[in-house]
Each structure stands twice: as structure tokens, then as C-alpha cells.
Image 1 (cartoon, helix red, strand yellow):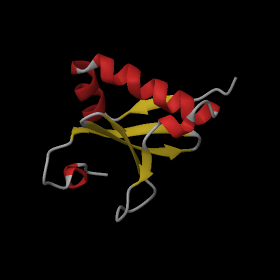
Image 2: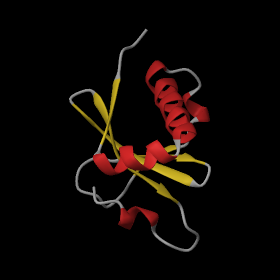
Image 3: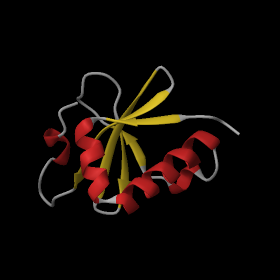
Length: 93
């Protein structure tokens, strides 16, 4: 089994404390991606236009933005996607 670690920025951790079920869904999605178990079921995309390499996972109406630093998955922010707006501009990554 592949070992991985997930760390959260302060803002992401605060948001996810209010939405514990979302945290579990996100961690399950990351586990599937890393382990290679049904990665096609996880909606992950690279975010264009950001400095560095950031990705987002879509979980219903939420977007979880993360990057990988030295093999550690770092959750940068978690946002509620709003219609008609660029949700990623709110993320200070």
C-alpha cells in the first residue's frame, strides 16, 4: 500500500472543519488517485494560469485546490463553486 500525507493550509482546515464529510470525500478521492484504484472516477484537473502546479478536485458543488510538495499533498483551499464566476480567483495560491 502506498503511503501519503495530506496537509492543510489554515484556511482550508478551517473550511473543512465546518464540512467534515467533504474532508472524508476528498481524502478518499486522493487515496484513489495515489493508489490507482478507479482514478477515472475522480474529477481532477490542472488549474491553468497559476504560478506553480495546482490541481482541483471537483466534489459536487465544491472545489478543492491542492499541490504536491516533496511528495506531500498540500490542500491550499476549498471553495464553494458559484455559478457564473471564476471560483479559482478567490484562492490565494
